Length: 248
Ligand code: SF4
Ligand code: FES
Image (cartoon, rainbow, N blue to C red):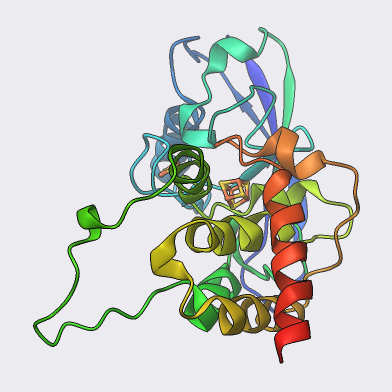
């Protein structure tokens, strides 16, 4: 396939960026999107030009590092996949593909297509954990009965990989789907009850402090989420938040 890539180039956080056109040829349909960018970067390096910086790590849909806005959609046109799992067979010979970083005030651009998502880390640090007494009388987790539906819902919430596509998809750049997944994975389990009140209050406060917007109620986040995190988690977080405020 021969393609035209329109890629956001930005030297650093303080320099204005712009879209730059790159023609590319010899792209195989079975290449992943990131492999196609690898080919482009090899060409750029051989010509003495700066390669395009983009985030990636596992390249198998697990780590959440890859984060590209492709033709206006986080992780591109396929559903239920991350950018590293997107294949070039989703595009046609002759296509023009726009590639931008995830856009949000709370995700400032570091360089080219790489954004700083440490705001997500700070939300996690505000409450995305449980404290377990390890003094010698700890109850084995397997000895604590958990309702099967709750266990399944908790597990599903825990599959959030923190990629940020939900934020990039939302017109308000809201982090409600991410934060609610992290709240829900503990709210549904007995182990998560001890700190439940502080957890939801602290995580929501941190989410607001980072500059994420309010839920737009459009459901764009759920559609673009590569892990199928459900909007039900946002409803659960809102209930948890209301009841935590009443207890305080
Ligand atoms: S909720 Fe989905 S889109 Fe948002 S960070 Fe988690 S995995 Fe990514
Ligand atoms: S590189 Fe790890 S999810 Fe894409």
